[in-house]
Length: 525
Image 1 (cartoon, rainbow, N blue to C red):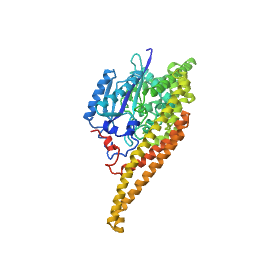
Image 2: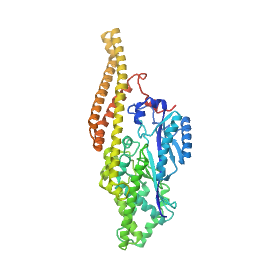
Image 3: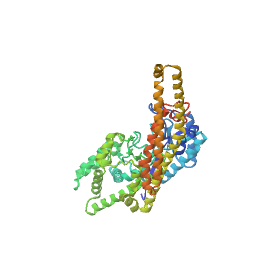
Image 4: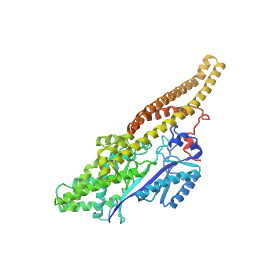
């Protein structure tokens, strides 16, 4: 063995939308997501799409893009429905990380091209529809030697399992020590809508191992002493390590609420977003683990130089790492508020603010990590952060401009038109009936007119305020401050305005509503 390779098997989730409906939604076309839209009465509650057969039109699309992928040497293997209606997934056989990353970028391009031939459009946005499952790109990551040995797979004897245990614990230590940077590698304007939405892990990095592996690490922590082990202790420890394959037989189900789950012979980085380039997460993870393994060797060598036997030196170092990284291990429900509270007590990072996450690459420990390992220079890190800040600000800017245009030029005129229809109806009732009967018959419509008028006024006021906030932010030349201003002063208006538009969608005559609704978008015909 002369080399260790990083392997990646990505799982690409996506939505398919009928092309005609896509073209009728400017927000989808320009931003990749619906900036407005009330939930459909039926969406994913019954899990009938997830467990159902793949629609015929979708199968035809899948088969063609898979053939195109094979022609390019991309080993796509699996296809299936996902949780939300019109949501699907494709995944390949794992490959060396650089190659797998390139293949993912290529397959996304092929899917978009082939979808048009089938009158579909592909949505890779992490949260194109509010209230239903978002899309991730789970990165199944492992390490293997150039002789084909998976370093995260249990061996057939105590020696092989000692190797497995060493790499497992070092990965945990690397993840624990670099939580903020790992968050920075996956948290974007679009992925922030998905993380923590009761369908994806929160913005807290934790690792799922399963109760049996966690119990084994706890036992190693208590058994391995800082002093020299007796022969009996060594024998007992090696016997326990030798049982790892047996332990893992019942412990390979993946925990779907964890952002970083051990799944038998690899870790699954589940927090990566569906339209992301895998490179950001993989560069960060590989650099963190490589740096940790270098530190591990130095610490073990230092103990050996002091006269400690090799096995004991490894055991002692692993024990320190098990203790140091214990807070990152969590086998419970990562979606729960209880975990958010528990993570805070453990001192784990919980960064949901995108500009703050991006800035994690400029922390001193981040600079040291990347510069010392010759991955990025400090100038390159600063440049990457500036680019990410600008991308974030401009994406929010585009969403704000699109929403403002739709609100004032589509929604408000439609609501006014419907309100005028109601006013004419009320006036007709007043002309026909006496005051008493009129009050009884027209009370509901008068109330409706008032509600519609209030929603219209709120939309116009908030849109004006959003435009003014944008003008102020645009004067800022520093990209970090610009991103922060867009996040704090512009982005909140997107949800505020949407609230009133979605209320109007439930009120205005369906025949008048200018945009396709969720019940149409989410169910392919």
